[in-house]
Image (cartoon, rainbow, N blue to C red; front, top):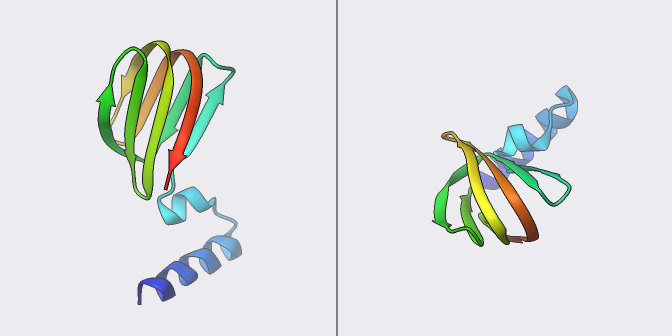
Length: 92
């Protein structure tokens, strides 16, 4: 049943020209240079320090490594990070 629902959502998204992140609750990650990172559709902060951020996602986790990392804004499904970002890893 879950597979059928996923196929239906993909079909509907394609017909209505909707972005996949909206239909499938996937994360949208926007990075500006190596100094800003904006993540939508996260499920919570698992770990935060000035050198490492770990976010829970619907389907996996996101690790961000860097220096002088600061969370500038955090909402229920959005987080905005600034600092010197060295590495971003998506772990399914």
